[in-house]
Image (cartoon, rainbow, N blue to C red; front, side, top):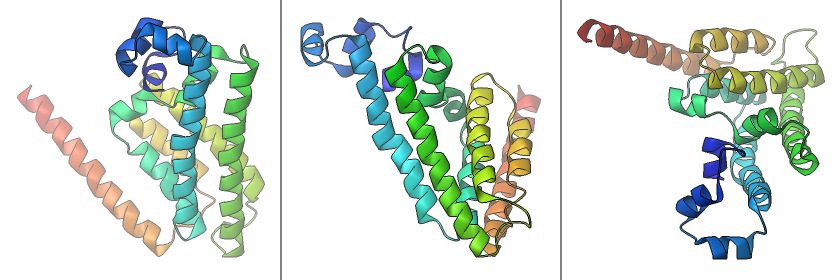
Length: 206
């Protein structure tokens, strides 16, 4: 999974996989008939580990509207190397498109899974008065899953964090900020200020 995530499907060789796993070529072929079979297994492992971890965090945080807000705000403020690495599913969707029907179906299923959780949490938020008037949970969930994939693609090609942050804040504008959200936003603002000051010092001493 890690090798495909870092290098992509086409750029990953069997020798890369041998080196990463520590399993010799004969044993690797004994467990998996070819590179594609191992790639599909890696996608399934990513679904179990990474996607379900994201879903778990979305379901754990309260209140519901803040869970969705914090999901995106954490993503935007993630370390730059993590943002540039992107998401295995998004990277694979870009690389392979619909060329491999099984892989495409797995990726669509994962996107749908996250979108459904967004929607469920937004319905809770609406019932609790955490959505702005006129905001429809299903429509907003569809927008957010699209924004999520956009963030991952833009991060891969080096679009600056401020541009991505502005897009995210616009997409989240229909979710009211709770007291806990205001506290979290204050912490994030201080972190951004500290990071900016560090960059200025680096330029002055460089």
